[in-house]
Amino acid sequence: MTNFGYTLMTEQSGPKDLVRHAVSAEECGFDFEVCSDHFSPWLASQGHAPNAWAVLGAVAHATDQVDLYSYVTCPTMRYHPAIVAQQAATVQILSDGRFTLGLGSGENLNEHVVGKGWPTILRRQDMLREAIKVIRELLGGQPVNWRGDYFQVDCARLWDLPDVPVGIPAASGATVGRVVGQIPVCWDPDRDVAVERAHDQFRWFAGGWEVNADLPTPAGFAGATESVRPEDLAQSIPCGPDLDAIVDAVRPYWTAGFTDVALVQIGGETQDLFLKEAAEPLLKALRDASR
Image (cartoon, rainbow, N blue to C red):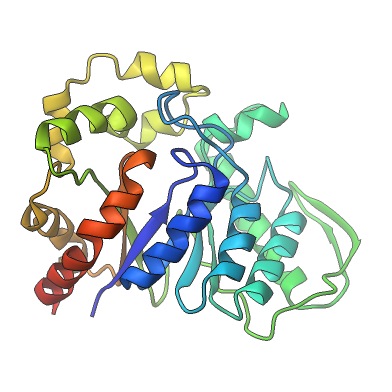
């Protein structure tokens, strides 16, 4: 049985709205919620980028049962891995064991802001592997001293540890057990409105990972995707009121073996309507189709 999740997309909503959406998504019956961890939006039209960890802490306290993920945090540049370990342990305590720490090698858009440049992908992956080792050591609860190729930790210990260990899948490596995917959708009663909104706020999606990982600013994404047309987005993102079209777009994920699929509803201003009118029938249609 596939689990279906809701994306708390920090790039398109402010912190109070994100917490409110999280509560509504749990009430609608989503199995889990993932929270993006960005310093900047992909495009200026999205307009937001609150701190993901403050949001996750508030969401953990405001919800009761829904599983929570960071999706994904880069623990190598903007955050030192020791800080990520402390944040993850705290959110796990606040959520009573519902949190999973999703990690990845990051994007230039978010990580360049600390002035350390942007390493090659092979170097970033090496950094990620070492960071995961540091995080695991700290989550073990003992004092840690670490001298590695990329990180140093001096006499560090986490003083507040959760009873339930923090799970750590990594976006750039093999994941044992649950395999999480994510897909954007643009539900709206009016398909034309949905297509225009997808183009305005999500045309960065057409760039592909090799481009998206390296561009440094929202202006760069706007320039790189200026030739993308609304109809181009509509071919790759389901737009409009047709729930069957969304189910068909998600189907390849569970067919490929993904155990968990998170939906991104495009447009911060549309979340309330999506959660009120579309979420529950969409979840029923997805669950019926994936059985």
